[in-house]
Image (cartoon, rainbow, N blue to C red; front, side, top):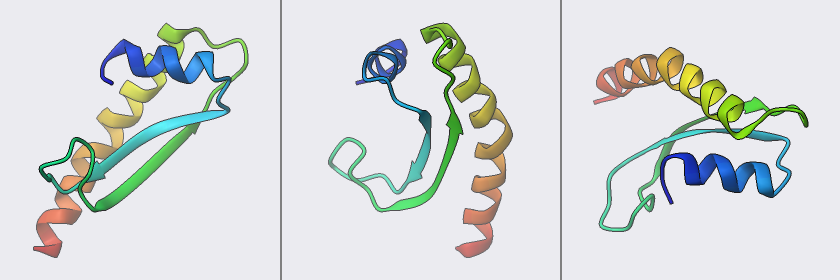
Length: 74
């Protein structure tokens, strides 16, 4: 699952939070060892577009920081 389909599924399931996972690449989609996970709350009134925007902001803020941490680890 990818793109807006993820956010639609999160909304349809009535989830209270969503987020992002940074993991090592493997042959399986999303199957690599998890390196970092971050989550954000979802309000009941949030639309699918709201959820997508919140997650996008999370990615913009934290993904570069996570990559820097990975580079230091290696």
